[in-house]
Amino acid sequence: MNQPSDNPGAVAQHCAEFMLSGDEPARTFGFILRRAGPGEAQLEMTVPDNALNVFGTCHGGVLFTLADTALSIACNSHGRQAVAHHCTITFVRPVQPGDRLIAHALERSRTTKSAIYDCAVVNAATGKVVAEFRGQSRTIADAMPHKG
Image 1: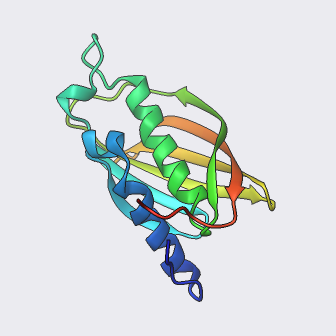
Image 2: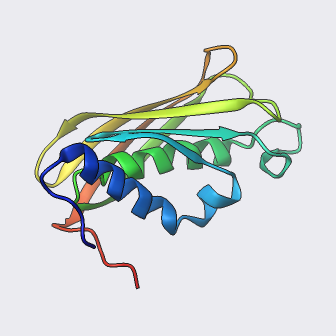
């Protein structure tokens, strides 16, 4: 993948666009990139009806997917291919259909092969946290793959 290497912000933006270009769950649930920077990503979604569980609230797996996607963008933002290694999520409060959510993943520490990220998922209307996610990533290649 050709990417600008002299500007870390441009690298992060380029990698974010690459990551989302082949992400079917992100497309299915309507994730929108709000921001990408070195070690950081912000995604937004409005909870659609196909994201609801039997109780009529947003399925926890969808919230996990939103946070995990923000993690994937943040951990690949340095231009090196990385994958999630270990992740946990705590669901704080229920999310209703039509709620607009913002997931903000932020790098907490990074070595040559691993990193730790925190991601808060917030209801945009209330400003309240609906889920807290922590992800650990593992670098598996020194460059992003070429899209075939």
